[in-house]
Structure formats: structure tokens, C-alpha cells
Length: 334
Image (cartoon, rainbow, N blue to C red):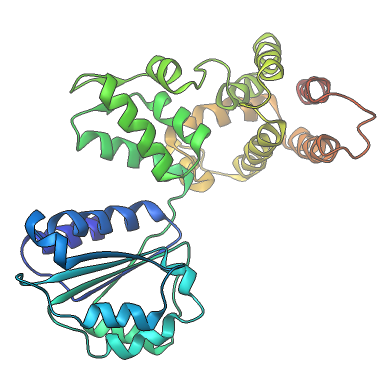
């Protein structure tokens, strides 16, 4: 995020590169940087003749070079933005002839999502010399809650820890989807509000009481009543709570629990680092470790693998997802 801030700051201060090559697995920041350039380098009057948006599936490298070599009309610069440039991955190296000698009055922005170019080849080295390369990397899920907090803080909002973790559990590390949901909440809630689990439930549709986050906690506590309540809710809402997702998350939880059992230092910060989880969750692992010794954890992981196979129709004997889940929960807790 600091790299993005620096790019934006440099552009605001007039330090504008002739080429911005934005690449990587996380499309959110690629979109944000290209949108900032699209909105801020040229005035509204200049954009009509001097700003062009192209799409990788519709153009060839030679066409991009031709557009970039043009001179601006009645303006200091022109802006050429190529979106979905990853569609040009087979021919992208041909861009090196332009990059070696870019037009100084053109700002060429290449949005190369979900991929990176080969650092050993000429194009990468040429862009490093004459432009700017930004790689947008995926955040780990244990980093997303802090990202949510920072984004909201910059817009004068706060968020309850559990609320942010609900978003992460439901949306994973897809920053664009999370940002869209945050935008919805900020339209509804007044400035300086703290977003709560209730706000998430009422406006996004994620139950604050019946979700995989709460199921995992209830299993760790061996709270039979709560576990049964949650899986009954899941059975009534199968599309929102697919069994494959539940099994995957529980498998991750018990795999991490194996690591927890191997730790000599079980202080909060050390556990969070070792398991790569938010410190908020550490107490869940401490409780679960007391209820599930290492041998039982190993048995549970085997049960989860068996259930995963059955959920895909192998040896399930026509059991419904609800019955499979109930059987699994019984075997885990007892």
C-alpha cells in the first residue's frame, strides 16, 4: 500500500512517468492506480482528444505503440490506458521497441492483471529504465482485516474486529469485493461510525451468529448445542454455506491446531505469527487445544478428508449434505 501511496503522491507532485506497467495477482490496486491516472492527469477539457482507453483483447501491440507515439492536441500530455493487457501475454515482449524510446508527452498505462512479466527479459528491464513497474500482490487472509481497518480509517470509519473477520471469512482476500461491500456500508452509516457485526448481517447478508467462524469456535469449545444450531442453519441455507467450504475451513483450523500443539511458546503474539492468524483468534486455538489433544486432532483431519470425498458423491450412500455434516460433527466432538 505504501508503494501505491508513493505513486499517487509523485503524480500529484508532477513527477509523472511515461510508462506505468501495473501487474500482479491482486487487481484491486491495479484498478485504483489506473483510475487515478485516468481521472487526474488531464483536465476534463483535455480528455476528449488526449485520453484513450484500449482493451487487450481488441488491439495488437503495434496499435498500442502507434497510439502512444502520437502527439497530444492542445495539451501537454496524452494518456493511453490499456486494460486487460494480460490478453496480450503472448506478444507483450514486442512492446520493448516502444519502451526503449517512449514518447515523452505520452503517459502509457498497461494493466496486466493476474500475471507478471518475466524479469529476465528485455521488456522488464526496459520499463525499469524508462518507466515504472508496480507488482500488486495478493494479501494473505490474515492481513486482510488490518487492510479493512486502514481503508476505513482513511474514510473516517471504524470497524469491530469480529465484523472485519466476518467479511474476510465470507469474501476471502478479494479486495475488490470487500471494498464494494464497504462502500455500501459507508453509504448507509454516518461518518465516524463503527461498523458492527449487526451492520454486516443487516446490510450484507452474512449471519453474525451462524457462519463458519462461529461453527469453528463452537467445535473448539465442544459446544454441542451451538454446533447443532449452526449446521441446521447451514442445511436451510446451503447456497450461502456450501459444505465444501465448511470442510475446507475446518481442515485448515485443525491443521493449524496440530502446529499449535507443537509450539513451546504459546504466547498470543507467537501463536498468531506461527499460525498466520489474526491475534483475535488465538484464544480459539488455546481452548480447542485443551479439548482436542494431538492424537484426536489427527483423527479429525482424517474424518474431514473422508467427509470431503463423501460430499463429492464417493461412498456417501445417498446421504444428504445435512446428514453428512451432522455425522461429521458427531464424530469430531465425540
